[in-house]
Amino acid sequence: MKGMFTGIIEEMGRIRDVIPGDQGVRIVVEARSVLEDTRVGDSIAVNGVCLTVVSLFPDAFGADVVAETLRRTTLSAVRPGVPVNLERALPAGGRFGGHFVAGHVDGVGQVRGRRPEGNSVVFEFGVPGDLRRYIARKGSIAVDGVSLTVASVTEEGFCAAVIPHTLQQTTLGLRHPGDPVNLEVDLVARYVERLLGCSGPPGNES
Image (tube, rainbow, N blue to C red; front, top):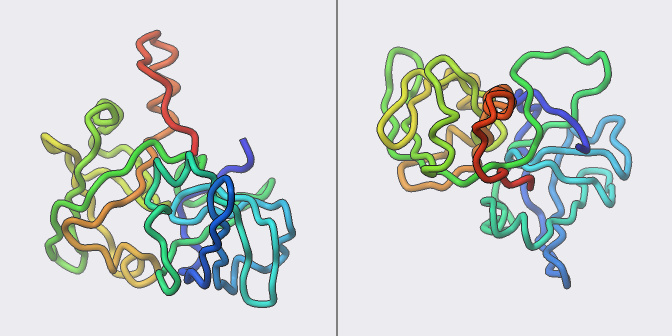
C-alpha cells in the first residue's frame, strides 16, 4: 500500500493536461496546497484514487494512470479544465480527521438525487450490487475521495448529508443526478468480512 488517507480533501485542483501513453495516460494537475513538501514518488489521492507523483512543476504535478485504473474509476473521463479533489497521503503522526481511506477505488457509483435539508444537501448515491453489503447506517464511505457518513441505506445504495463547507471545498458541490462517482467502502467492513470468513471476490485495488 503506497499510503493512507483520511478523506479530508485539502483542495480542489484542476486537470491541466491528459497525455496518452502506451499503458494509460499521464495527467497534469494544477494545485497549490498539496505541492507543499511534496516530492517525486509521494502519493496524492485524485478523486479518491491513490496516484504516485512522477513530475513536479511550480503550480502542478504529473501522475500516471494505468489502463486498469482508467477502466475501473472515473479518471477515464477527466479532461483539461475538470476540477478534482486532492489529498496528500497521511504523514506519520499526522492529524487524523476522517476515516482510513486507502485510495483503492472499489467501484463507480452514481448520484441518484440531491435535495436541500436544513443547511446541508442530502445526496442519494447508487452503489454497485457487490458493494452494497459493506454499506451500513452511520458507517463511513469515501465518495470521490471525500469521507462521508452514511445517513440511511436505500435499496440501491445510500444517502449522506453534505455540509456547506464540504460542498464549497470539494467537487461534491458540482455533482448532480446522473454523475458517476468513485466509491471506496470502509476498510473496517472489509476486514470484518474477512475475519468472519465470508469474503467474496477481492475488490479492485486501483
